[in-house]
Image 1 (cartoon, rainbow, N blue to C red):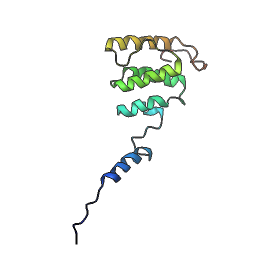
Image 2: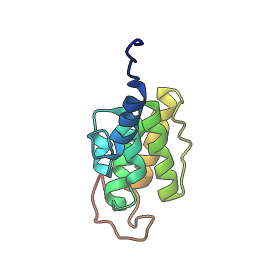
Image 3: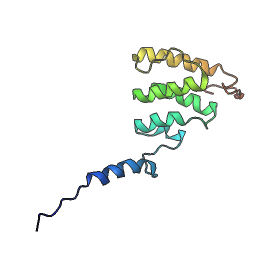
Image 4: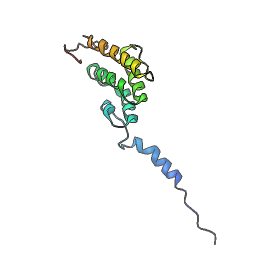
Length: 129
């Protein structure tokens, strides 16, 4: 008789790690609301899920996340804003805090001046649109 075989559990663990995110576990980002998640990874993924949100909801939220502590969240927020609006305003996600603040101010100024969203929808008057 030989020695008992040791079971290799690495394969099943890797399979579980691969399947878990798509099987409904909490780490799966499904909508734009996850932009306020405490995990930077989830916030970054949520920025790309703004398609169903109106401009009046998505644009201010994305502009706010240009000031996120996480550089990847800032990058993905900027990319979503560029795709949605066709504008840039010189924002550099990895720039200095001063450079980023100036560009965010330009984004906010532009947004506050909009009476019509980039998709053609009229906005109600008022600050913070």
